[in-house]
Length: 303
Image (cartoon, rainbow, N blue to C red; front, side, top):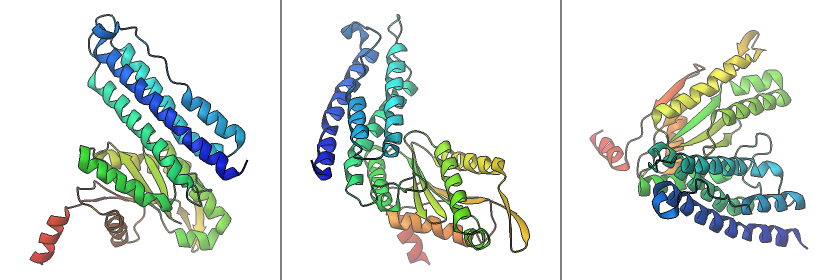
């Protein structure tokens, strides 16, 4: 059987996974908020379709197991959140806390989003993943951010975008060589993955830069995520000699809350420009304040 046909079969098998989980989501909500109607059994059997679909793909080797790591983590967290939501009702029949439902609903939406983009990623030559870091590639960055901007405009779900830059990358490359700088890039990418929540995304943007898309997050949440990465890197205490003197591996970052009407290319360009204008001072976090296209036009005409 040709590989293309095998992959097509597996991608088509996503549909039952989506359908089963949509039905399961509805039953969880009924059990949690209307126990008087459902009988309040306190549990809803979890669908097994995703586990079987994942097993089939891994056994046949149509895609590498690393591709499914993020999706599997969201799936597991979603099922835990569903069980917690239902069990929180208790014998009293009191409705669960809003935070439990919000967490469950967010994970469900992200699970469907990740399933939906699985097919799109595998139409790309690089599969949407960077081989060195395991982060998503620049080839899928634009479409992913556009989708988040559309969701923000439609549902008001705020998110933040950040750029992380390895300081003095070219000097480190010149002093240490390609092999060692790649080890540093891999280390930073691992720390980024460690700092993110299940449904956040990170991308390799340039050889020395990464982009983070932090869902359901304001500017303060974005800064907190960046500070976690920088603190973890500081704890690693990576030192070396460049230009005849001692130096430490550091990061500089810029974070922004997009506003309705933003264009992805302009947003990333603005973040990049802020980092560039900050000069060569390493180990800094900048806040970029976006304005709407209308406000930007008004400011331009005033000048």
